[in-house]
Amino acid sequence: MSLPATIHTSVGQSLIGKVSRLFNNSVTDVLNELLQNARRADASRIEIDVVDDDGRSILVVRDDGSGVADPAKLVTLGDSGWNEATQHREDPAGMGVFSVAGRPVEIRSRARGTDNGWRVVIAPEAWESGAPLAIESWAVDAGTELRIGMPDAWGKDLAAAAVNAARHYPLPVLFKGEELKRSDFLAGAVRVEDWEGCRIGVFLERGHIPSSYPRINFHGLTVCCPMPSVSEVETSECWHVRVDIIDAPALQLVLPARKEMVQNAALDHLREAAERAIFRAIAHHGRHRLAHAQWLRARELGIDLSEAEPWLPAWIPRTADGNSLAVGERVVDRPMILFPDAEPPIEQCAARVLRSGEILGGALVREVSAFAGYRWYDLVPRISALSFRIEAEGEIHRYEEGLALPDTMQSGTVAAIMLDVFISPSGTPDESASSRSFPADVLIAPDDGWSADLDETLILLAPGCSVDPNDLADLLEASCFCASDDVDNDSWQTQQRYFLVQARQIANTLLRGEDAAILERIRDIVHEEIRWLIPAGRRVSMVAGDGQIDLAFVDEAAAPSD
Image (cartoon, rainbow, N blue to C red):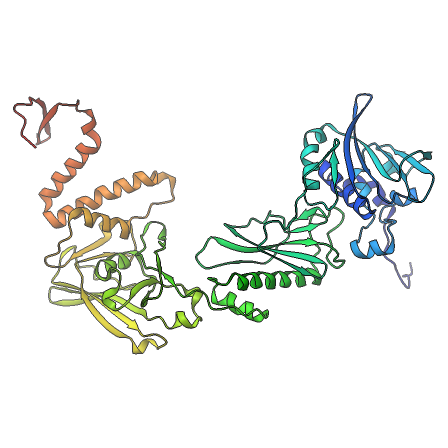
């Protein structure tokens, strides 16, 4: 067999036998396609109705457009029959009527400027067989009407499908005689720009924008398409875009279903234009909290923005549970000092010493690395190092992130605890940092730097420490409690309750002694598990020991006063 000199692309005849699978046979696809055909035919309105034909429901879609002069064009796959201008602007592809393939369909049409209309009836099997279809003359107004046999599944979806198809469609749509409501696809935009046959609307909304959110409107046919969005730092607001296509031939939909955009150079250019539109909207807004990298991207696109607003959230020590970062109030127009992220026990214990930070000469603020690069942010002094210095049994030990205390050290009172803070002045390297030292009263040092296991946690107290057991238990919870995600470990509330019981017992043992801790534990058990069993107005005495418990109701007269 010799090879041919040339070959040509073509469409195989076997494709005709598969046309009923080009679309998903839903009423939504049918209405979308037929409405697009009507618009291209310069219709001024579209009517959708349901009629009864000998007990069968028939969907009727009628327009007053230019009509179809050549019936063969309508049922020729890939040959749209549209004029050259329409083919250039919209790439119609000649597939719209095949959205009803496999259904019984009657088509009636009359081209404008002609006296004679026509009709063709297409049986379900004729779509794929290629059998001849008889054309007969028919008296009909100018335009096109399709009468489609409705499956039962369409009945419950038709009304909603009609409403959705008409919502952003540029022409009036009547459903069962009533005009459906239409709205501008860009309604609610804070800014609208015209760009190469499109309208780009910029929106500012709270929360995450889901990927299922329609971003592009093609004359009423809305599709999802990834488009640029910009979220400001530590806010729930997001700038995003929607695009209304008016006349942009290079922006094309994937055929035949037209539910996504063709990924081409034109779409890339649109995305860049959308980015510019977002940054112009932010510039018009007048203030922002963009990350420095986003600010640079705006400049790269030719949009000059002021720097982000020069404020930072007040520093609040984070807790071990969930490693969450609490957001403090705004600190603005006063001296600030950046506090870097550290392990929760270090932050919690340092907070007891530093409080608001005024002893360092400024308000402590949370480090926001996204702002690094802004002049105002780079000039803020920052804590470059933080560590605890412990004097115990004549030796000096240091505790900081990544550095553990000796295994031989035990919880209890030590000779001294000092917090050493190194502060780097604005715009200077770390080696020029100055140091400050402050006495601390408590240090919590988990064995692994961060642990919910209190048996492996050192609790060191300075001489004369004034913390009470409840405060110490709360500090242990903030520093060490982290609920497990494992359902076998019970609910968050149950885990927290067990942790606090252990934390209170340890705190009482350290601060009040073992006897006081035992009594406090018994008191906790009575309060949580037993108190509710005692009748109102009655009192119970308990004597327990050596494995025995004696209980008795006490007469009010004999009961000790509170």
